[in-house]
Length: 101
Image (cartoon, rainbow, N blue to C red):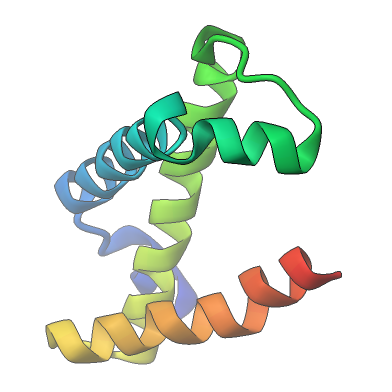
């Protein structure tokens, strides 16, 4: 599949759903009773209201979901397992090295 086809054959409903789910899970994850308080102590940051980052965060989550959908299309992943493998490779190759560095 060409890059142009991979970019145009994206399931936008899935991209929007993935972005919304990621935002909701992040908001739950960083609640003080769960992991928010520990995160604030470990990083030395405060848990300011989400309104500060929400517009940029929504765009970032949409972009992340779209890029992952394009990568899945380029890899020719047509099953859930193959799509999950593409996501795992993206995590191992991009996210973890950036977080460790």
